[in-house]
Length: 175
Image (tube, rainbow, N blue to C red):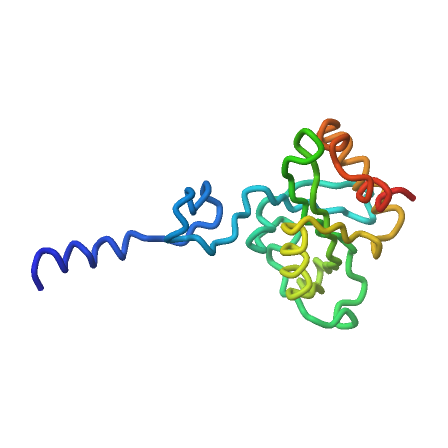
């Protein structure tokens, strides 16, 4: 193996997949052009029982405080007495003259800490993250209490972003 081949092999080893980096395309449309940029997505958990919302960036890789140490099952009936949560994917972008919440989609999950089991539909979580990135608002299936908690959280977190958000989101979270 000559020196050129050895250098090329070392360069290939150094390349890594990093979905949280800056704009991977940098306008050139080459390497990384098809990579999804998750810089503008934030996972927010709504604890239904406690009536509170919190951000946990670990949810981007299923490593949130809620998810750690839990084996998730695809059948809700296999997790009796599970504590209910909503994982809400929120996308932020510029709209209506400033930063705004442009995509908001909610996914159900339950966790039983004692049995270390939980319920979540992984395809639903992935599809809803994608829909949030595309600017969809999907919160109609949430319970009224959780909608109120999420609305207050978004308003308190950044009032300017709430003002610039579409009326569709504001109406969807109004009870």
